[in-house]
Length: 468
Image 1 (cartoon, rainbow, N blue to C red):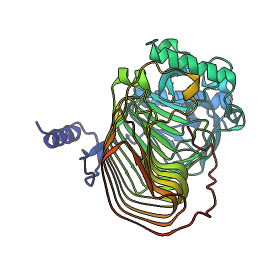
Image 2 (spheres, rainbow, N blue to C red):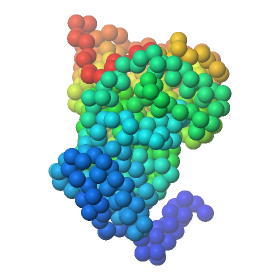
Image 3 (cartoon, rainbow, N blue to C red):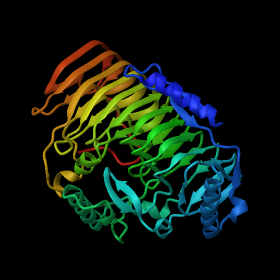
Image 4 (cartoon, rainbow, N blue to C red):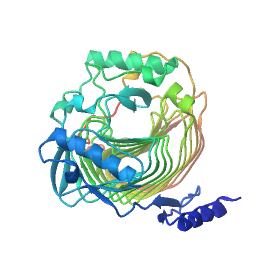
């Protein structure tokens, strides 16, 4: 049975069962993109005030979210509603068939007391699985879940900011976690919530979930990665307004996730904006779930280190990705950045970035196969595996200013193959035109610029500047 007939059969079955589904398509992807059939939540509402939520009372409101989620799930699904007002809470944990709905004027404020995010849950830290503080909004092995509405998620940040600087105790813990990953220690034995470890939780994490919807809400700051979609299938993220300018404040991290559409979003980040990841080293090889079938369209990145970033945690592989009609309205360090290293292995293939534009940046397109950040000297190489990079296209780019058009740094042990860069126009180039090392089958067409001026000013984006 072909995929189209199977999809029509599923739609018919859904109709026969009396359920409703919204279909979302992206036929423009050059790699194919099967329609997303999104669950429509039943018209049942579970308002948190009916379960004891009280403005300013973190204990009562945390308990109310838990009770409302349980009642919603038991009833067969619906909406857990946050009414207008400011609601101080701890962690919010999902159950299946539940939509967290943030009403107009609703603001969920997460207390920045780490004790409220214990006991530890199955999570990850920069691509390595571990037991850690609960993400502030967390779903694990759920189906038909999401967040919607015009309201806001806004964590308190005063305490989390004290963890931005990585003390020696944190460095020692990352060494330990890296070694546990590399030597096959079970995840349930990798506890990272001990005092001094300071591994900040994600704001939102959907972990091993099916049919996830993120619709229309606002985010204002985050302790760590902002929206983390981890080992999920069938995801639709649209019309989001995300602002977070602290350390490691990526906008949306799509990690070991398959079949996802991101559209009509605004990201204003202190780190990368839209990020594709696929786990770190031995963990990713064990889980064996590549990130694939991704479409990103019609998004605005105000600031960010990358408009689109892939890696450096990508050991499980990334493929069949299409980003188009996206724009950076302020500044980015790189428009499109692929980063890996000799410990990752995996593959990055069949990626197209098309019809994108930006103002000021360092590079329009960069591939770096030797990005290790702080890991270069603090942990050893347990096993060498080179990343296969194939069939990458960048087309139809407008940039006001850039240091360079492209900077491609392959690995001589497995050179980059199949790069197409065409129809790129830059107003002002400031450092050099291009660089390519260990690259085969590089095709460039119609790359133009108006002037070359080395007197330009450096970029200044808040957050932590990228580096090796």
